[in-house]
Length: 264
Image (cartoon, rainbow, N blue to C red; front, side, top):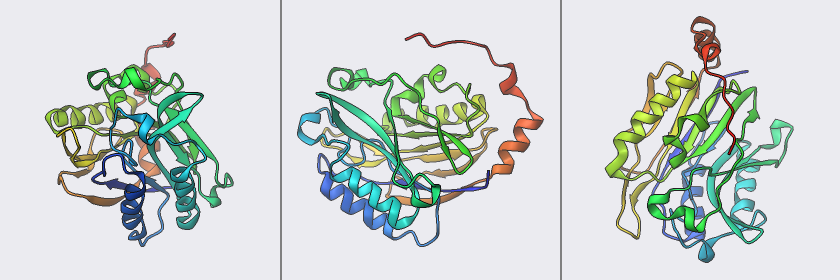
């Protein structure tokens, strides 16, 4: 397990316009001059948080997935974020993790469907909820990716797999941004893992404002990056593997956790 160099891409999203969003994100990604291990995009990065999936949903073989695979190949980095996928006549808010060529898993894609659909916005009425947690093994790191509203439910994130990095991609609006920052820190502390949250900025078509506050916390809840600006911003953070090892050897809090099983 070596240090992991991660890129947080905090961006505006063009409403229900996958092509323009791909163009905008590619400009930001092409501007990354250093070698990195992982690029993280926000929730529904190709469309914004729309409840009209029939208008913009793609399949796992469509343009946005091909675009992600090409970036992973060209930049030799993993890339992740969520988008709207249609499968078996259902719509999913699906996070995809695309592996780069040098990982010996060239082009492999692992997926996680959002478990907690956002009932306040009616997401549960149009999207099918997932029921499987995903742990990704990448460059010696165990990574648990989750999506936005999942952040409010600590049992689902509970670190029973001994993962090292917890990722939340989101469209988390300004009125509840304090909860976003507080819960990211709490998830890092209680799971003794790095915790990264990547949020969007700007206004959506419904008038909701997003202020970003993308952030990174270490295993003790120390904030090592917080993009306070409500502007578009790309930041590179290096996650220290030794920090994981040392903190868990010194503070064996995970060993004392309650034993439980999620039954539904």
